[in-house]
Image (cartoon, rainbow, N blue to C red; front, top):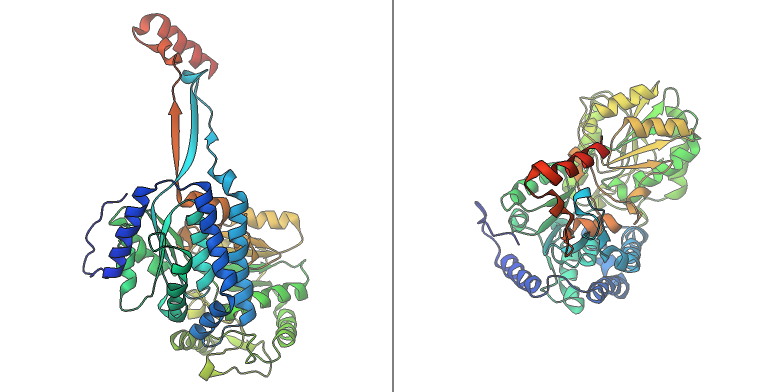
Length: 480
């Protein structure tokens, strides 16, 4: 366990410290929960989702002002329920010790293996954009690994936080799981607790502060951040199909997704084709963006920021095209249509930071080298998308770029596949979760070596001039 270090310049909320101490004590009493205990915890998550679906959807809708009911059920509840069941299905295999090979000095009777053990008390910091999924997906991994967890929700998710605080004790004791509301500077204090692992999802700027707080206690961190995720449509790919999949991603949750397409590369001369297809698709799918199918921006600050980003681009020479033709949105409800922003340049705000909203900057290119050079000169993104049926071109982009994850001929979906690890690199984060990789993130993979009654190392004991030297000569010769 990590030894506590007094936080600097912050008063630790009493409820944080009390629950942390309680969970630490519970961990010391039961350092390695059984398969049956872990399975029951995962079943508890599944039951919480199934038995409280309407209340969870309503709470998220209250926090957003307008959050599509379908999107909450599809992107959050379905994913969490399926992840919990998937973890139960594979848990026995994940927990099994793994035999490891021996080096030449330990043959033939010794044994070596690894086994995963819970790290202890885990802290999880949740963003507001997918607050159910981002709370429970890492929790599934933490519970599968046998840990206890404290979860701090976003200040933009207070209705959901209050609901989860009410629901959680019906399924889990406080020494196993506890939820907390944000607000009043409580976030930095939470990340200064000496957790055994700290999991954070949010912006790169906040991620740096979280990592600095964790460093005071040498707490390991998993940072799931964001950045500007690029997408390139190759000349061979049907523009209508590309537009269908990209528009779906950009309008899902009103673009408020960390792995969303943040800017789009189109072949030179193909912009008008894309815009035409995109407008037809947006109009067919959302004939009225105010009817509840389309999600609002989370709060006034975010709405104003996205609007200011669009205005800045236009003022600097970009052309903004409303892809929801004839619909201007609803400022009072913070509902904003999707805009293609054409002719963007690097000094525009839209190309300097993650958008997190319904804006789609479009750049044109002439060669694949131009695309990879542009991406490679910038911070590593959380996702990269390639639309092409040319396998050689797909492989070229895979070989010459680096990102957290990749989607080929699809957007977003790589982030929700349980068997694929999710995680960034560089500015977009560190560490992985989902499935086996998530289980390992919240485990200490302990190496064990068990010596046999007779050890081959005895053949290498001094004096070295005789048998030991000859044995070493023989081993070195075999390795030459």
